[in-house]
Image (tube, rainbow over all chains, first blue to last red; front, side, top):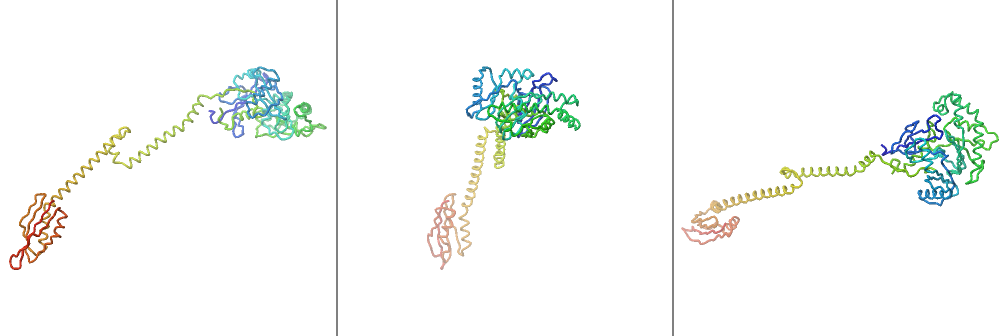
Length: 315
Length: 186
């Protein structure tokens, strides 16, 4: 019965399909008083109830972005319509478009758009035949959970399937860059050594296994962090809305599902690096138990916003 | 950032069950008002019955459309009873008055005769139920009958009372007799 509370279903669809036969993970939960309560976890796809609020993730390979200048209009719908017209004008696309925007600096908007055909193709490829209420990009869903602190910040999001770097100034977004972080490879190494993957080890809380994992990660941390640092520097330098340098960055927050990985990256000694001592843990908006992937909790959180001011009733 | 949505235009749907429950919730106030009104009426009726037991004990059936006629009939019945009783009362009163007036003058005269030392002789008494006529003689050295007192006393019961002192004559020695006539109507 969804009269006084709506169940939120977060569908996390991974692009890397057929690897271990589970490319859709479903998390159901409730959102009340700015808190998320996770109810159930399903390792495979299930049909949602017609009244559920369905949130799906969108991979970045079907999202295109553009920085667009929009006049200040109060009405949200008009603004979206204008953004869509602007995108159509720039790109010449005449198909159905899904358009969203994030405020950026200097009156500009970071407009994200994808064609309806691409989105439906993506959903159908994972046997998602129902319409979602909300489709939200991958890396931004993790970002939703984090308190954006003032100053220039880089957020390094290391997800299980997608990783990226987001450069922000306070609450405004400056740049997003998707990076090719070999999380699966690291996981593979750990799995070969210990027999379990990183997430299983962290969930189990077994001290010996955690220690072993730490050791494995610290031996390859040089390799990992050199790649990451290069990506961060590239991202900062390709930021076009506002020219910034690496020195201007207040900190780099590492948003990862794996606490061991985060710890390893923060404690890694970087001699003569511009990013020396800038790696920190992010500040979360709400208490988070790391039993589930952050991206999925982010999707649940995003679903909660859709319920409006009176969370129980929506039309 | 929070409002970003890359899928627009999903139609929100309600399940039938949810719709019915919402419908039920929305008609609860109307229902409660209805039941409240019914309860309120019951309380009012109870108070009426408590206050007017006579009326409700005499009603054969409490139906809203016939109750007015029944009340009218009941009212007329009670009025009739009341008028009957007052008629009886009146006739009783008349009877008492009649029996009182038909003999009051005799009683009055005998009372006077027993109070004064003089002898009184009634020569003529006539009462036909309406008119009163009485003649009497008083024997004594001087009259003890006060005509004004007698007239006022008799006027309490009879009307048009006239007490006439007709004449005074010598009888034997210093004894005289006084002739009176009393007239009146009932």
